[in-house]
Image 1: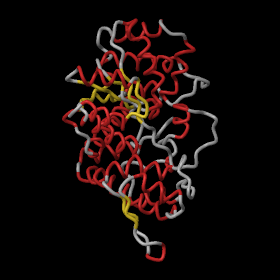
Image 2: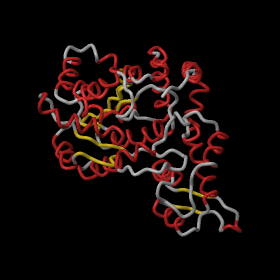
Image 3: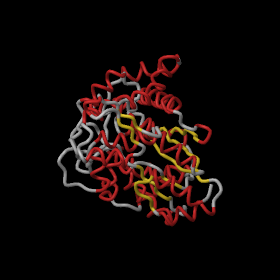
Length: 358
């Protein structure tokens, strides 16, 4: 595959790339390119973490990039997820891997790495302390959004170490690309800034889009990555997210009540699902309607859908019914995996019994 085609695929994943020119040079000069993403095992995965993550990983792999996916058990422990119970957190991590298997992630090019397994390396904690020494508490607190926290919150001392540890992970894993969500941007920028001082190569950053929650967007004056974080889907608000083992009935119920203003594209989660999920998984979108409402509508790309919607030719409820069907089709293989695979079923049962803590 030529460089331009590989670059095009990666740009489809990256809402922001730091920097595109560095990426082009990397693609032209390095044969084996490695990226990473990290996930706190904090509860059931929703569709952005399952389906959308799989779409993005597979697209990057198609562009010639291999992955290390960090199952960040210690980070979830530090962040008090699942009640701060490390054994339960590790159970959640095993469940997450089963979800990605069932989603169709290209696991021939993915290595799962547990965060506890890399922390015993000789240089890991020395590097964490070096990163801490090189930065003010204020700068590190500004990175607290990476763990879903505000710098104004009353953080524990352990949570203050979190950004320094995440920086250390990038260098420990030896990756070329930090390929995480826009909510992780600040720590990735920090890693780029301090890499030369620590004697490491500067990581490229390919930040993917954060899928919106289904609720009406909150009023906010935020912009950029801060705004994306405010709008993103959250498992702590179950009705704002489609989970990877939701039943067809649950999907229909959640989508039916979702925010979807007529003729409006901006901050419309249903339109986002069409753009980032439906048209990524299917070559066209068919919206079935009675003849008296215009008959069935066949759309070949997102732009066509957008034109129909803003002109008022497509009613929100007709769109919602179609989106529910497509989402159910995406999630069905995962549901079947957890129904038929005994090991996966036991993991899901355990995870469902755990209390989700913020």
